[in-house]
Structures are given as structure tokens and as C-alpha cells.
Length: 169
Image 1 (tube, rainbow, N blue to C red):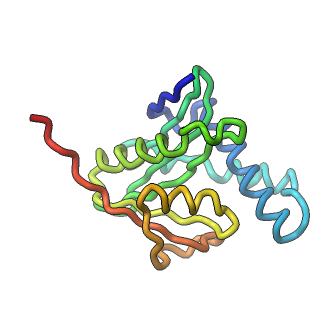
Image 2: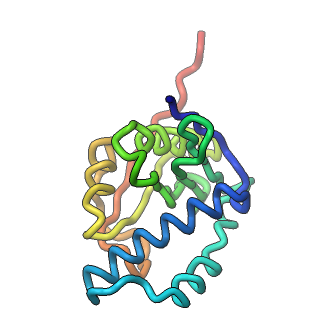
């Protein structure tokens, strides 16, 4: 099987399912690490409802869904923070599909979407306990920087300059 990646509406069924899986995983990891418990179900529902993903809608954002075979397997989103800076967000691949090349393809597609939006650089934040994510970003050429936001759970910030598209001759 292979990965295919395409933009989809932020409120499509695949996006909703992936967002729920993503948020459940990162929330449970945080609570297990810091409080020895999983996320309270009511809190989880409130947080999922609050994060609609509407910032990933055109004309200033894109949500990309990766399908492994014909089934949704991962996502990545970009949104413009300013005319030249895009933020990478919601990078996620289902656990059973990790190690099959989906995450680098999703990030590359998100970088191309950011270029299409006019961005010259892409930034992101992540948590310290998400060591796999930090390793992925470093492997893909992202440089750890100082903070570019004050997001509650942000502990590490990354940046990558986006090379312009080469003209086809």
C-alpha cells in the first residue's frame, strides 16, 4: 500500500476522526506523565469541540489528509500567522501506521501548501514529552528556536526556511 495526500475540508468526517485520535493521544500522554491518569472524558469532549480546525480553511490555511490505501491514516495542517510565516499543526499518524513513511510525506505536503499560501518560513511548537515529533522535525531540517508564541503546552519551538519552488524549464 502507498500513501496519498490531499487537501480536505477541516470539517470533513476524516478530519474529525483524525482530530479526535490526535487530541486523545497527546492529551492522554500529558495526563499520564503529569497526573498518572488519562484525560477526563468530559474535558476531552470540551477540548475537541473547542478546536474546530477552522483556521485550516482556505484562503489562509489548509488541512491535508493522508490516506494509506483508501483509509485516512494521518493529517497535517498549515495556517498563515502573517503573510510570510505559516504554522505547522495537527501532524498526526495513527500508531499502527507509524514507520511507513506517512509523517515525512504529510510534513512535505504541508510545506508545499505553506509555499502556495505565500509563506517563506514555517514554524511549529511541540511539547517536551513528544520526543518522536521533535526527532521527526529535526530529521526534516527544522531548527529549534526560541518561542514564537505563548501556547499553554508549548515547550519546544522549531522553524524552517522554505526554499522557493524551482521553475520548470
